[in-house]
Image (cartoon, rainbow, N blue to C red; front, side):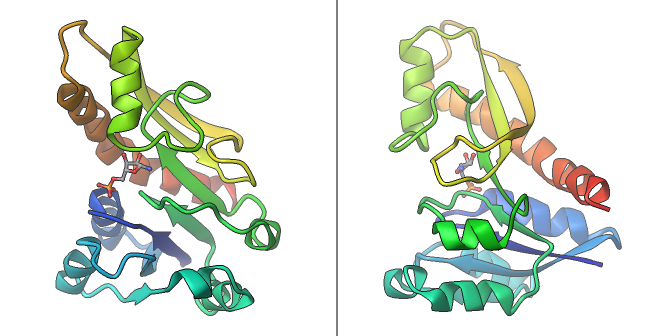
Length: 189
Ligand code: GRF
């Protein structure tokens, strides 16, 4: 049984989709959701689903105790789902090809520092893009630059508002993130 841990800072809609997806099959289980935001609404949602949660402070995140915290779950995959902080390089070294992130654009477009949430979709609209989408990628030392595992595209109409673009992209995230994780786990043997 593969053990997954999810890092999330906010609403956690992707985290919840992943939890629900793996509840219905026997290959993997979400062992815990970790957050750097004690007010993240994902915490209440996890409580309702009986999923353990851990809040960690900024001080702990920057220390080696954070690595110990991750290690204590013996994770097969660490999933960033709306987690905004940069992962320390000693953690990346410890978990080669075992940390993945989801990003709401077709990387390498609209990635990097400051490119999150509505900022991404605003930039897509401003540039009159005709498509956007989702990238699932390995995490390396640089924001949104790790090797891309999978991308899913959606058409953008010129009249789409930023909110409509966000909705289209989120729909793709909810549809594809968990099955892509399942494929990654299968490929990792
Ligand atoms: C998603 O758009 C994801 O691509 C990005 O952060 C957002 C998280 O949304 N990395 P949610 O908290 O899962 O609803």
